[in-house]
Length: 150
Image (cartoon, rainbow, N blue to C red):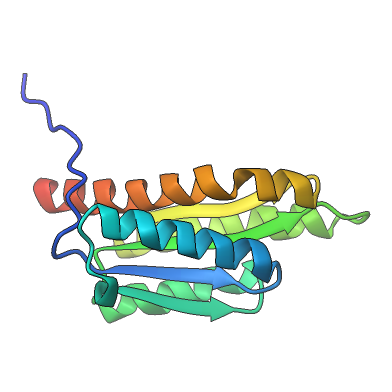
């Protein structure tokens, strides 16, 4: 049996990040954690591109434009959707998630979806480090996997 093992070498990879500004403090913290992790895996700082958009619903469109450019090996989506008192939370969480997935499948590009969906600010802050680190690892691993499979 042939087994393809995870490759976490980020050298020569170009990573695009889209951050929703609506929860800017959380998203900005996630970007910095991911940036440091990407660099530690060998991604050059000048091979990381950050785009910011108003909110989580705008993230898929920005990801789509980055994918269309064909300049990136993987993309990362950052933001936080925090439950409020209305149905809007479900709408934003579901639609942004579906949009991120669709872009990845439509353009055959790995996208690490790290848009947090939490009940409150405290839960979002508690997940910054882990989810941002995971997103960086997923982006590098999946970019390398797709290179291997093509």
